[in-house]
View (spheres, rainbow, N blue to C red):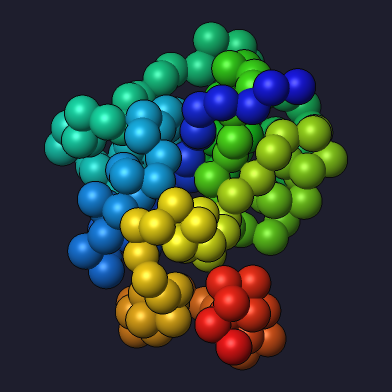
Length: 155
């Protein structure tokens, strides 16, 4: 499968917004699609930036997604990625990631986006941005933090 385009859940949009890095997210991803539940969770009644496109679901949520007990944002993001096809799903929640993987949906998380940004030469170091994410209560275990630093060639 050729993968192009991105569907995002709320977590990456929220954490990158909190650390003032929505511009970096845009530079890494270009256009991003979000389902209605994610728009409500992240933007409320506000209109998302032009590079974030809300896309309504056209199919009912699949039974596997409904019984998974995920939140509305995760459920709709997984369903939208399945509907569109050929997209990466930006997702951090472990249970949601497991379900998406079982459905064959390619995944990137908030930290993987930092690695992508570094690979593209958009940032010189992932460490300060991970620290900023931690300050905004984005949970990153010490083991994962060290693993991302190693993957980025920073240790």
